[in-house]
Length: 414
Ligand SMILES: Cc1cc2nc3c(=O)[nH]c(=O)nc-3n(C[C@H](O)[C@H](O)[C@H](O)COP(=O)(O)OP(=O)(O)OC[C@H]3O[C@@H](n4cnc5c(N)ncnc54)[C@H](O)[C@@H]3O)c2cc1C
Image (cartoon, rainbow, N blue to C red; front, side, top):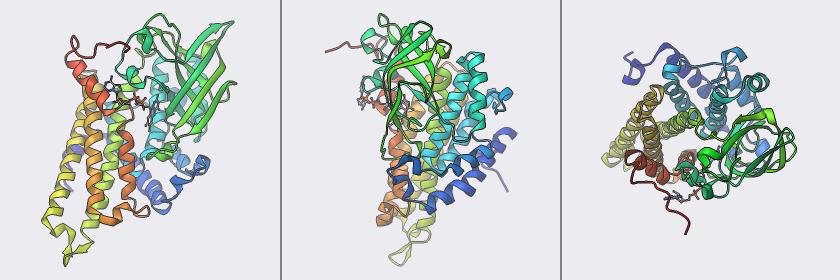
């Protein structure tokens, strides 16, 4: 069989990872989602995702990505790491967006720890992560105030995080609140960012810590009931005199400067996962319009329907090409990689959202029904608009990257 353009360019590792993920999604994830449409709406978050789904992901090797080989993990070819992550995330997104987030947080935090965690912390925590398929990790930056200021970033003391960490007697004491955290409700280990110097801007005065869930003073206060991506169990965490051993400091003062290894592939992964949601919406719609009859003929024979379907396919191929382009820029450490990551975030958010809206339209009333599953794609795509920075803030960062001397200068408090 002739291969598509995308398939022709894949390495052996990429083909293997793509096929492994596709098998897992087709065999485990899609049948589960289709048979349990109501389950993501259970208001007891502990009852939502059966543990077998993560155990199967573990058995397929999909939890180990980013973990150093010496701890039994899988380090992807560094020359194509972001591109391969994108292929895997797209396949997972085709199955379920929230599950894709759940697993992707593990890969992103693993890559971050591999780069910034001292050896003793890697030796302590990677084996525990590897040993337990239900061990999840989370990355806690966002607070009730100022999330967009951080993304931009506005590097002035008044835009600093409210979460503070102070060092005394060999322990860090953390106080503050983190909200909207993916995996926040059920993670076992948290990367937490806190202000450690109020006199300077966040790029000089933010430190990061590794905080185990059972640390006294850390309380998971809620699981957020989100519109989409519900299996990620997005949560809120409060720190009240939470004492962390001094040796669980990850990066002192320059934590945001060192977090590019998390943020850049993170944006690629998010866009790629969202592409997977769009592909699933397209595939279901293509099936529907070739079966459902109106006006005496299947829908696809009505030209207005066929044109909408073509537009969905064009959007998805454009997103796919842009994801690959931006991922290559990250893999090559190109000068414009940050700008491209923000561009693909904006483009993938809006185009996939539009694809899912078209899927709703072409399904008529069926599209609104929980048991059909089209409304789920629309909900899942809507969540991505405000993950990893909002669309507008990401767009602003693009302009800032192009015109650094004039755009994006902190305006100051009113
Ligand atoms: C499902 C989900 C998962 C998430 N996961 C995580 C996670 O794992 N870890 C984490 O740390 N965070 C996470 N977040 C938080 C996410 O990064 C923030 O929600 C996002 O950055 C927006 O911040 P905010 O909600 O505080 O909105 P705000 O910053 O209050 O923005 C509100 C509005 O104001 C606009 N705005 C703000 N500032 C400006 C400006 N200077 N110029 C123009 N417009 C502006 C925004 O574009 C937006 O329209 C998650 C969010 C969601 C929804």
